[in-house]
Length: 455
View 1 (tube, helix red, strand yellow):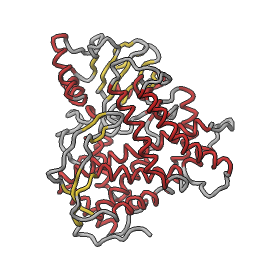
View 2 (cartoon, helix red, strand yellow):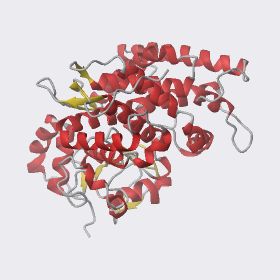
View 3 (tube, one colour):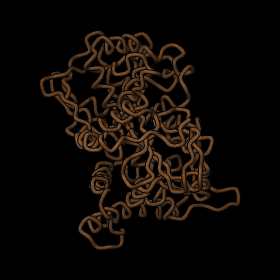
View 4 (tube, one colour):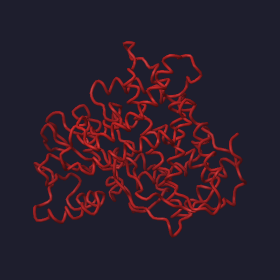
């Protein structure tokens, strides 16, 4: 085996730069197809692009304790503080232990009604024949779901306001990422971007810290089952609890991660089903057979196998968490190569999920590929929309339950169709967003009787 990973030759530098200039997704796809699954950049950095499932498993699982979040990911702390998404080491392990009970199966079951109720209330306002931006719709639905699950009645009514504030923070972070190649002044330097950041962060703090204070003052109040109450009440093995700052950071992390990524998975699912009406008809047939016109519940999810396959295939083609990276804390060997402390490794589900070695006809939307034993036959990290290893997304079961229930209700009510206005331009930022939304036409679902909205 070679002593170092492949590296584009200097004569290809401008070609590679030109392709990356057209789009980072195109650039990453090109370098892996041209130079292999483990590629070193020509930039003066110890930066490596990894698309080999076995090497990704080494980084995320087998040698996870030798890595931390990369430098760009740590910038996200300006948005979410020191929440699970960016935390590291023993502090991360403690917080993970404290949060884990909030995502046990019994607790997840209590969120199902809120999930169904949110999409039913939204769908009740939709009209047959109208063209809607389904990305906006799904963001609003999942925002209401996570607000109710996280905060209960205290601020769920202000979910839209909270969502706008956090969107402001994310837009500022997107601008920071866009300038990542330049010097980034520390957060305390009063640049215009940093001042905007602090102003938005203070708005978030005012809402969340007010609710935290109210809960601490009245721990036996009516809101006992939401995630915020569980965070406040959580105790570690030594009896310690989270500080208000820690609760705030985890609440913002859950609020952000709990609605944006699921909304994107739903948006891309509806888009792909609109492009493939035969697949959409098959989902509708499954819903009619399993539900017989009634509202879906938690007990129905196991039977909605094709609906589940649609979500898996959508996240394969358009993974909301499209990239993740790690930085080596020590010298480390990965894939037989030796790397120094500080080396950074970029792993891209977008590329790995479209590898023809793992997926036949990888660019095609084929939900049926997941109906057999494909998931068991694949290498462990040939498909990893929720990450993996100790840092696998803590809310992955919450997200899948939410996505299946929302998709089922939406497709019970309406058929989604493409129009001349339908286009998809991707914006790879913290998540993989549609730059201009996704506009689809709503058509009547003739084969099902109307389902009345929840009381």
